[in-house]
Length: 578
Image (cartoon, rainbow, N blue to C red; front, side, top):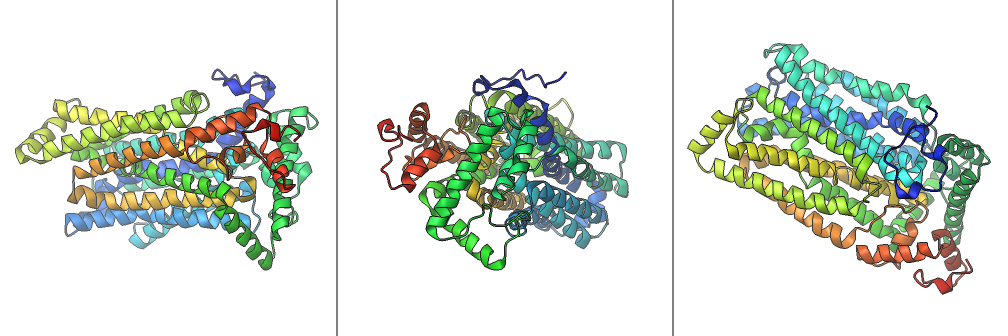
């Protein structure tokens, strides 16, 4: 079969060559997304591994003086990864901005770091474990900064959301693997003294990291990144390859010309401000002298503070933090603990419930990526998902309150639900609500904040701006994951009500402030978010659609503004001559 058959065509693909939607963009995306698998596997395996008798024995968790001390040890082990990821996002940005490292080499370096960190975690020593967790977090933070940008820059516009969501599929597949590995080792390698029981889950981190390294030849460098470095011929060749079209094909030439025009306009705007640009000033290596780096970052800070970009940064950061406040990573990292709190009290049964949870999450993410994101857009799934998640969390909180209010009820529920297939009706309903919650989350808030952040920023500031939502993602994870054991010990059922309340906040915020980005090209995001755009989401989208229907582009509008002409994006008569 010459081309990958696509049974999930989207309306925006009509009229474009079939070759554009062939196997090449999927190959590039899947090859790069092995880096995301490292992130997913950590989310799946570490919570269950903490519950393994052998791990608790090897690292002294079974000797903790109190429940509070045990909660502190677990939180420290898990969140060292998030702390590393936070700084990894910063390191990843500066590697590209200061050293001129491209998207491909950045992913390769991150995965090499992942391998080193994984080796250190195999030693039965707390200091080595913390160091390994920090290094693997550093690797994942750097990779997750680069990966969504890279995919968005190589993807055809019509399936950009789908391809960016593929990295989330890789996260979910390896999340499931992490969940089931723990169940497998506790079933087949029982005993608190079996070092293989806890070392096998840690060792499997090698798999996605090594697969990403060996898949590097299947990737291209980002054409847009190459253009910002003045490497036009290489950009044309890369774009033609991934579109599966000749170099001189009209579509390749048009897409390249649009990107060049956007970058050239950014250069003109920068020159008008009297500052150095990131475009074409650094030579083939992309490295800049120290004075140039300082000027460049002054320019970037000014760009981020400008009204047309500032709103995008704030929206992206808010969505990432609200994503974490849905409680998704609390459930991912501590699902065995949560299922035990709901009455599934033995380690084996809790890990089994966790494994089923992972399968539900993975299937939901795959269906979302191929059926929803490029067909229904970004806003509707987030709004519907928030409603469903809030209902589920309120129910689980109410159930936990009722069960926890009576020792007799709690004991009876724990006894009933400790057997596979058993359980009180209330406990079974609570378990079902957790699964419904994860279906709703996977079809909405798990992927869309990443897609939104990857696609909305202008090329001139994309890497710098993306650092902020990426760091927010890991800062939010750190806070949520670190606090969860303490919250479960202290406020118990209130933990679920806390997350439910924040989900409601997320619904309100999305409804009023997050515009639909489906079908908008990367270059035309300025039309949707420019300084004159309404702050209200639906009004901003209507304004964009009016301009787009009139054939207006962001480049044309910026050129009129540069020439000192009055521009009203909604007023077609003022820009027809563009």
